[in-house]
Image (cartoon, rainbow, N blue to C red; front, top):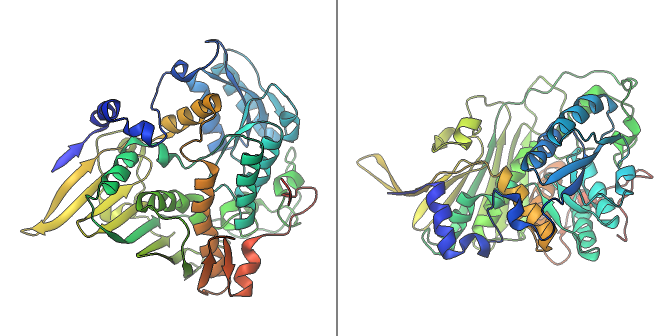
Length: 454
C-alpha cells in the first residue's frame, strides 16, 4: 500500500505542476498572488452573516489581505455582534451594516461580494453583483432551479466577472490527486458511482404564521420566493421547496460535485428520483429518505439520502485536520467509485481517499491512499488569486451550475411523483413529464426577479 500524505503531495506538485494544471495554486501567503502594492487589500461585502456567512467572512479576514466594508443581512439583530467581531479582525475598521445588499453594490470601492444567503437568494444576489462590477464568491448550491443557474453563467461571462462557487472540495489537494489517479487509468474503467448523504436532522414542530420579530425584514428575506406570511420555521430554509431542495441541495451537492468531477461526466442522459418523508415528527417538506439515479454514457451514478441515521458520522474537525481516514461503511458523506481495477472511497472536506483491491484472507487490501485536509483556505486563496489574475477559478460558476443541475433534475423527478426524465444537454431542459418540466424555472415575486436578459 502507498499512502500519500498532504506534505508529500504538495512537494510533488512543485515538480509536476499538477496543481497548476488543475487550476490551483496553493499559496498560504496572500502576497504571493498580488499584482499590485503590498498594502492593497481586496474590499468585500459580506451578504448573509448568520452561520456560514460569518465563517466565510472571518476566514477571509484571517488572511490579512481582505477587509469587509459591508455587512448585509435582513436580520439587523446580527449587526452589533458581527460588526464588532469583524472590526477586531481588521484593525478596528467597523463595517457598514445594511439590510438591503444593493446599498453595498452601489459602492464602487467594493471589489467582491461573498454571498451566503439562503439558497433562493443566491442567483439574484450574484447576478446583481456582477452587473455592479463585483466579483462573487457564492455559496452552494449556486441556484434554486435550472434556469437561474444558467442565467448566473451568462451574467458572469457577459460582465467578465469571477464567480466562484463554494464547492471547496475542488481546491483540495487530495481530491486533485484522486482525479489525477483516475485520469492515469489506475482505477480502470468506471461504470458505477455511489454518492451518500446520511445524517440526523430533527426539524422543529409546526408553528402558526405570525408577525416577524423586530429588526427582521421578512419581505427582504422572502425575496424571490412566493408571497407568504412569516413563519419561524421558514428560517430552516433547506426543508422547504419555496427556498431550496432539501438536504440534497444543502449538503449532498458537495458529494455530487466531487463525484461528477472525479468521474469526468457532464450532463446525465436521464434522471429518476424516489423517496419520501417517513418520520412522524417535524414539519419539513423535503424527503428524509431519497434515492436518485443518474444515467450517463457507460456510467450509472446513484445518490442515497437518509436524515434519521445518527450512527452515520460526518467527518469531524479532528479527522479533517489530521492524518486520519474515515471508517468508510459509516462515513455519512462518502463517494464510492467502482472501477474495473479497484474501488475508490472518497471523503469530502478533508476525508481523504483509499483504493481497495480484492480482500485477501478476508482482510482488506488497500492499494493506494491519501489523507486530506479541510480545503476552505485553499478555496479562498484560489478565489482571490483569480480576482487578481482574472483566470477562471477551480469551482467556476459553469462547473457549479452543472453539478447543481443534478440536484434540480432529481428534485423535479421526485416532486413530479418519481417520474423518469430525459435530459437535453443543449437546452438543459427536462423532456417529457409536464410537472417535472414546470420546475425548470419559477415565478419570481417583484421586485425580486431574476431577469431574462442579464
